[in-house]
Image (cartoon, rainbow, N blue to C red):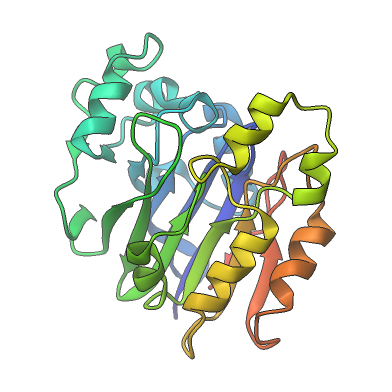
Length: 266
């Protein structure tokens, strides 16, 4: 029996990397990674614990060029030798990074607008832009043998396009970064606090909950809250805020920051 499975390797300013695959029984037929913020060694070890080989990975998708999302991209290219997909703008930004650019040659694949087969015949993806203070930041709507999945991490504001695409997804990964009270009373300098909450930084718990309430639909099965702040949020605060607007039948998970999550059946 075919199933779709999802795993977070790390989610937060310490590093970001997500696994998404198509399984037949226990065997992973094909998969993709979203972002490259953990070491190749850790990626290989964590997937092996779930019986998954990196040989199953057919593509790597990149959301933006901040270090916590691309720290190991050069290593992934060097050791995994998989196609790297992103927008032309992001590809140019990645190529200019000292630790990344030299390893990208031969693995660069530029996404066109609309749907792109990132794993031919099995997994397709389309990007959508989101506000964030990087060269360009995108989320991805992904179809795996017809199953619809969406991820948006590092989002200053949820756009209409993102919300529309989320209404077609069975599983959504969305940022729930900070609690406004904790941020306002934090030791962060005011300039940094403004950067976080100015609409081009990160989503608060309340903004996340408002977005989830806006796109929740009958076919939604799972919501995963990602990129939680270490100093300005707690798992419980993030969970409680979104759970208030979500039907109890829909699975809600706060992804761990520095450790890997379980492998979830979607």
